[in-house]
Length: 269
Ligand SMILES: [Zn+2]
Image (cartoon, rainbow, N blue to C red):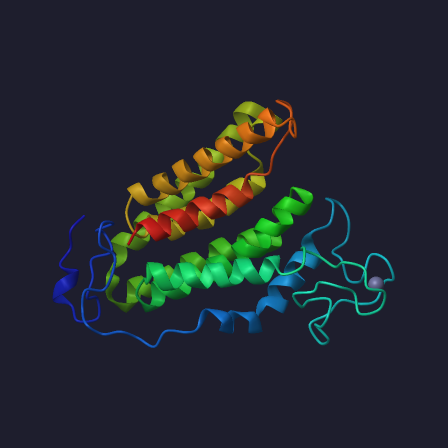
């Protein structure tokens, strides 16, 4: 898997080397401030409010209590950290401050993982969908196509750009295969185990997660999967022991897949 990336000035790093994905050169780019992400959190909240609805129902367009419209033209206070309807004060979408905290955490992860520019864009793109997906899955146990497909497609295209920008086709082909492989793994459990397996939504989320992590090496998506399974197992055990879940309970897996992916990105350092 070793290619002479280092010989090309535009590719100062070897993406195939999962152990040291950081740019070794002294060039330190301008670093955005994590709190700047709060400017776009109404967009994330909008995605959560729209999509956190039961299967088969229309996307939410207004307050559940008073039907006051929810829109990006007038985001506050419904799409702000308070998450309250401006008309009646009822809660809208994800709990107060949670999306904002998750978005800041996502930016901190990107600053810590510090991938090269185009790879950073790909990771930011994926996280911009993964954060709302996490909240939607927790709320209604669904991972809507309208978020999982663009997450995977955009990540794949941006990594394709990174390949064109000098990294070469090898990491991109690996990312493609890893995304498809991880998605097939999740889809396979659905086919084999039915309702006791993962959902097809999990498979679509895994398509993007595997693509994002596969760029950095074959072991990275496996690490992400391992972290996700471990974390969900620990939480499920805790819920069972405290009587808050039964063996038959079906817990959403999307949040663990997101956290496992983030964990694997962080361990790349
Ligand atoms: Zn209202």
